[in-house]
Image 1: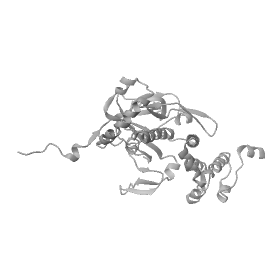
Image 2 (image 1 turned 90 degrees about the vertical axis):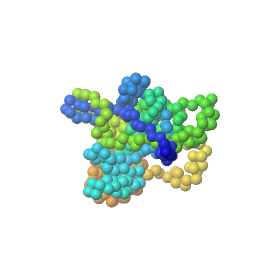
Image 3 (image 1 turned 90 degrees about the horizontal axis):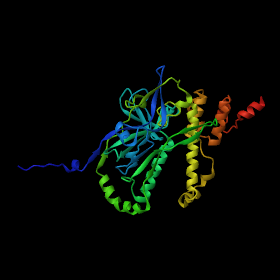
Image 4 (image 1 turned 45 degrees about the horizontal axis):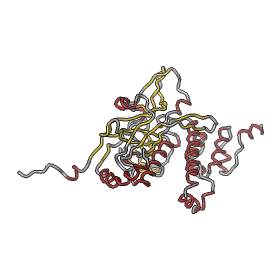
Length: 373
């Protein structure tokens, strides 16, 4: 009797399971019962990973099975609210929000007030193979850190340009200390992710030759969708106890965005955005392509518009005292220097009415205000 043992459209597909999650911090539980996230300088790893790398590794050998950034490190703005699962996802231009009444996803502008109020956060789901632990699946690492996301995507895109792929190239994923400066002048140390390829000149030619074969093989591989739940309900989070109360400084240590940051965290992110852009400018100074692009842009020397974090900080300081439409229009007119001056003025107790009447109004500094008194 004739028979078949394979369906080509199915048999060609291979799916890599998710073997577990690696975390970038712990949940601290105080004696009063409150919990808050705290960043650690090392990876929080499952038992099978600890057998290979120890209990507190700061570096892991990794591979990417698929040559697609959208799959191995999807990034979006996400809002969960008080629910366990996602309620809104956006890319900074457009979002899909779940309608509680109709249970349908509806299109809406992004960003919105949820990002301004820090209810919504940037979130990335990194998916990697740990070849020294188990090459038969992927581990997921969640982060919301701006520096981590840019560092990883930049390295992968560079490899794609130089070698034609980043898939199946041996790399090291690390936690590296990074000092940030708040607008108040205080500094703190965080441990964002960095990644580097293990390539030497002798192996470069071999990697080039293998690229067509690797890319063809990668077409048949699929990965499980990232686990996307509210970090508050993370069932695998490591909980440690502490008699210390929740402090503002400790709360800001949550590298992967699992906390609801206070104003000081907005200050830190403003500084981080400026540091990243300054670094990009410095790296581009010696790059002929970047120089040509800069020369071809007439607006290159014009003031840069205020960052989203500056706008969010101003909203928090104004605290809903003015109509939303008016506030949004005025915020979009600010450049970064003007936004910094306005933030300083509002923190000193100045009324925002003068700015709303004249968006280009120059605000006195705290020192000038004190001298005037």
